[in-house]
Amino acid sequence: MSKHFIQYFEDSFKENWDLKSMYNYATKQSITYGELADKVAKMHLLFKAFDIKQDDKIAIVGPNSQEWTITFISVITYGAVVVPIQEDFHPDVIEEIINHSETRLLFISDENWERIDKEHITKVESILSLSDVNLLRMIGGKHGEEILGGMQQLFDQTYPNGFQASDISFTKKDENEMFVLVYTSGTTGFTKGVMLSGGNFRCVVDFLRHSIAAGPGDKVISFLPLAHGMALMNDLFLPMVLGAYIVYLYKVPSLKVLIKAMQEVKPEWTSMVPMFFEAIYKKHALPSLKKKHIQILYRLPLLSRIVCSKLKKRVMEAYGGHIKLMFVGGAGLNHEVEDFYHKIGFPYAVGYGMTECSPLVSLVYKHPKPHAVGKAIDQVTVKINSSDPYAEAGEILVKGPNVMKGYYKNEEATRSVFTEDGWLKTGDVGILDADDFLYIKGRTKNMILTSTGQNIYPEEIESRLNHHPFVEESLVVLRGGNKLVALIYPNHAAIGEETDPDKLKEMMESVRLKTNHDLASYEYINAVDIMTEPFEKTAKKSIKRYLYQ
Image (cartoon, rainbow, N blue to C red; front, side, top):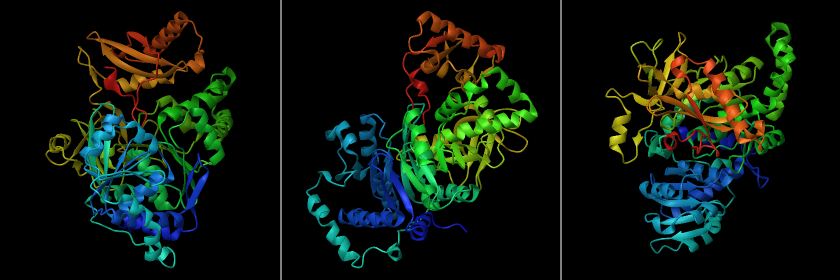
């Protein structure tokens, strides 16, 4: 039976009272679900003391941590609206979001407080440190220090026998109302506030908790920014509802640090962007697959199973050895890499979604089809805007209880993203197969139309380029009117940091020719530009294309 969205947290905290809920990897500190509930209760008293009303906005800016999650959960269970802001946004953007959202109370990490211009924060009444809830600034003459100084006494008076599981009773406002206001900054460069309701999130939580084999005590390692929709669902909402144990890395790590953390924590499930999923394949599987005798055995049906078993063990060990499920999403997954993970039987799930869909639209897990992003989740309908959705690609349209209420204070943008009959226009291009599995071709805004009328989806070419061991990442753009140019940032670990520039050009030319061999003639790459620095990316590690067009 489906419950009110907030009821899931109330029940989980009671049922998992003595289980560990969260662990800060950097500080080696953990708390139980009972301790989490206690801290949430204290936060509720603080909000009341600061005169926060239902539906008031409370913003959070900071790294993944127990403190971030405690604040977030406290806001939505109080009945206010939480505004999670990605800390890797430019300070000007953070300031703009705080003001645009009409935030009354701001929790911000000390590092981010130093980054922003305090004079630009004009509407916030109170600003508190995310790490220790100390007062950073107060506007309007309220006695903030007195309020904070008296919180423990107020808590003891409110709960004279100590806070017990039976004391948990969270506000359950109308699920159609806004619970979370997420500002996106994607590959197009535009920032909009996505209004998401409790019902939006419940739709996705209901589907996932019945679809995956996870439960109380399972360890989840989290490193993607919690202010992003994918991490918010997979690394906070879902683990909290299931009673899992969340291990937070302070920030997005290097591959070396991530592998070290995985092997120490030994998580049962986690979320992964393709960049890391592919990097571990290149580091722990590709060197073996390049050996001639392994290539031969890999193709023979009987011996292939032995090779795959050994490769799976090696890759599993890189992830800590206990993975039950790896969520992969946020960007396109290289087909050859996915074929490898599928062949060795690695437990991964590929999903498709966007912030505006809370954030999941489709998922493939128990019966994966390589290169597909699954079927639409329960209660959600996907439609392809083409004359034949099974033969002709078109824009992906979505309708269901997971779809946002709209963009905050932006009626024009809201109208433009919905069709007249209520379908959300995703901006992505896809096609369906006979079993209604969805396949992504690319972004409508990224599609290149040639002078001969051919449609080129650069993401498909980039997927082939990125599979090459000499390529770290790439971007395909149109230059000079009709020439496709591949911007490539080389994999210096594979080719060597001291490689002669002329030799590097030869290597990239070899990559170009090999890639063209597998492409249609109208997709041929005409030239390569070698990038000296990695591409600038969004929080989900997608390249900000608009900077390189």
